[in-house]
Image (tube, rainbow, N blue to C red):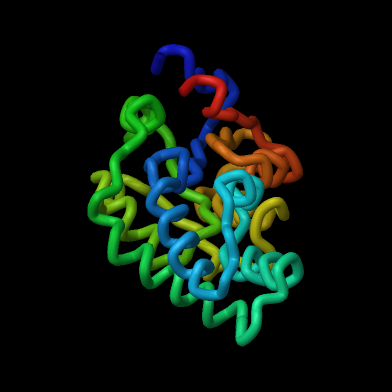
Length: 196
């Protein structure tokens, strides 16, 4: 299916989301959410998990607090516990071949960045596990921005670091907030869900 994931002729730089785009991290994230939130009596369903895709973890926890109002629930602390649990499981992460093939096909031919709603330590480790960390020209994480996706800040920062105008950047994403962010940044958008 790789041939179906097209790179626009006008693209001068590529920007990839990480979770669910380059790396099949979603099942591991879901397990971590289920375990941590279950300790607070929250039944975190797969449907709810999918609705949060692409959103940084702390804003997610504020939404959980708003929706379920669990007792003794401090969003920042719960988010840290969830990320710590997830971090311990990263080594089992598999690459999403169809998207990584696109990455590798253009590696060395145009600048490549990763823009993620995840923490830097997690983003870096995920890219190491799937063998791409040393190939990325720039990485923008939740630690580097004030406003996460769907705000365009993550992708605009990627474009700035790559020194390429946003209109010439193509973003590869798997979640609605990321697609919205890429469109708001004025970039070329590829929804990889159509190809997997």
